[in-house]
Image 1 (tube, rainbow, N blue to C red):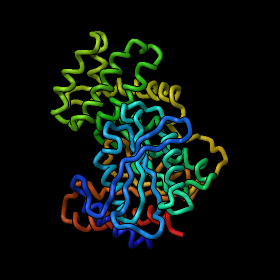
Image 2: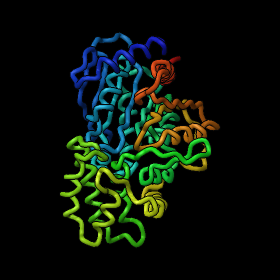
Image 3: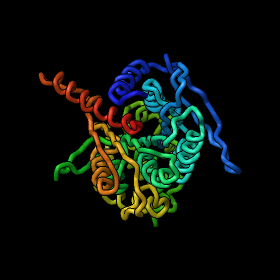
Length: 374
């Protein structure tokens, strides 16, 4: 990477060029195994420019979210290849627990630490630390892991995409589609996949719902099928899978299953959603308290942080990234960008709006690549 503006142009070119499945022109990929002492090895995929460089390249370590494809997810692959097109050396560790849709954050942070140490020890990676990239549920974990790794000289910055600050707001959105924006309650239809994964992990951990384990398993299976077969959770193509999966649920629990996974034309009952959201959050916090950033900072310094979020995100509302920025601004050099570049524009001003969004997104990518400047 030479300068952030030129690198951002190369990133955009790589993003456009890599819209089709791999192999990618100008990008070399390699599957590797990372070991550390007696710890269990993890798998990872590495992306580098195909042309050899005489100088070490800026290093990136990318953490995928809770998704069955993991490093093979199309958006992860395209993002990593675009960074490599911009001259980066990108490592994407495989978090098997998250590929199984288990939201335990510990395996993700372990994978981040192992990948960062491995990358920093490589002679082909520029000294001075890597940039951690956290996507979706991986965003808070990248920020949580950053201070310790930065103190060791292993991390120089964090890039978060589509992350969240409050588990309470995120779960409430997954069940109701409601979020607060400019002192108003707004609505965006939530992607059912989010509530399936959350309920699969925590529904049976709610006091009084211990008998719902079969339903948690069924919702986990449904979310896994969505990832394995690539159907959209809110489209009619999902309904036959629901009809099949519900057969494994005991009769008393089937009504509750249909609350979380109604027919595609329906949304969950709003009253029941408001009742279940807070107790789901309590169960999640009791089970995995490190899903969220600590409310009280521990005093360790954070490296610079750049955050990006899509305005039309149906899994986590964009307001969560803005809340993250507010929470972090007293502790770190942080900047957040919300863009609706990928949203469908209508009306006579569509082309002007798209140009404005393109410039905003380009500035955000330039700012992220600048984490390696200096």
